[in-house]
Length: 276
Image (cartoon, rainbow, N blue to C red):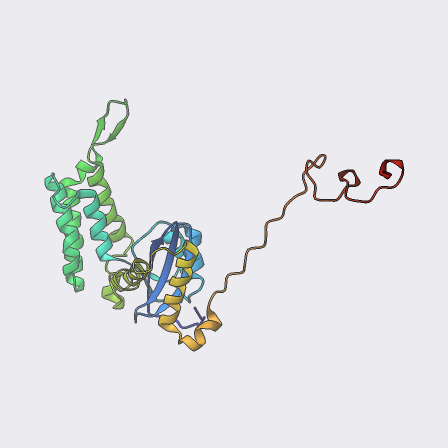
């Protein structure tokens, strides 16, 4: 993308897998594609490569993928963080399922789902108190251990412990209710359900492309969203052709050659052996 240097109030970031490649995309809160970065996975280095293309915004909205926290600390240390509420709820549901067996699990999932109903500071404070009350009542379950057949102890309610940790860490870091102070989007839905969905639609209707062809097609799709066609060629990525592979001469005597040799009878011979 052309570098404009514009500072945005909020930037939404997310990743989408294209074959064996992960495409990281940054979207402004007004719906414009700002930058993208191809990577082998969502690592700290990959996120840093994306963030360095964009001036630090006031708020970044993220699903909390791997490597992003350290990348933010290294590149955008003063940017406030908003964890995507939808992804928080999905992560908790992944651990507890939609119908938790334990009463503690049902109560914790209900707390997670009520995040969608928070619209002011008072409701946010009440939510934090509800989460703390859950810990006072059920927190001991997250510490219980069981001796398994392999002779090692493990947490009895491991998934309940993980679900609690997801909400607790996000709340303690102050990444849940950033939108109440800054007015930023509280989910990555404009990116996940917008740009990413359109990319999947593009690939679904153009099957059979190689991975490199798919990457170029996606880059053109993103570029043409923001740059007119007559200017797009100035910014389009043109991959360089791969150099031909170098062939090394084999060691040892030549087993088969293409040169000419007199022993093959290709020249006129003189002397008695050539006389009739």
